[in-house]
Length: 219
Image 1 (cartoon, rainbow, N blue to C red):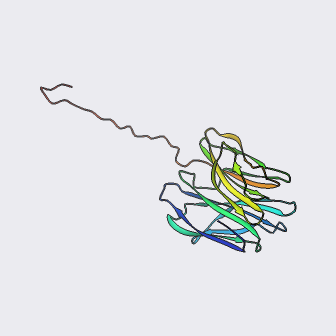
Image 2: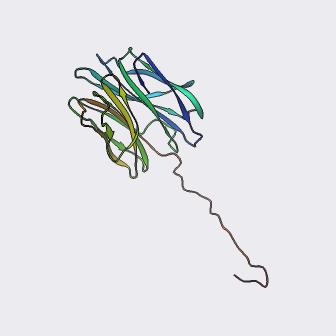
Image 3: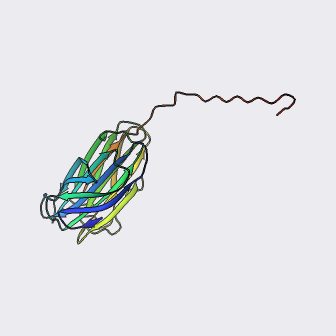
């Protein structure tokens, strides 16, 4: 969803999946660092800020990432509240499931005054999911996440900025990075977070099936 105001709201549906997590990314452009989101809600549930960052240039680009453990199943309104009535703002949401029902294991930020930023984050568990939000000081153009990442959404922040979210699964615990590409990126800000998987306990029960042929038959 894109727009320009002190609040931004849209309808979002959370499916009925086990160990749910909702992640919201917000990007904006303004004349000062007072362009950050101050709060995000999903229906009656309040989301928690992971991290935020900003970068200066001709204007300021701001980015923030928010999470909610066990969001209510169904359709509700996501509402983002901003510090000021910023001219350019975009936001979107990502549903995750089979995620540890706690804060992200790790998070980090990065900025670049003259191009794309790259955010490094270290996952602590195998099969973690890393999610990022990226703010760009130019119109959308060919903005896209790195080929190792899955694009979740990209939007223009009219009149002169854009943003997006992406994710990727990290099979083995360790360091990874999130970055974006685009021929018109002039300055950027990025926030990334690593979410550990949920139920990783191997099954303890063994199913045993015994078959017997009736007397006088064979197979």
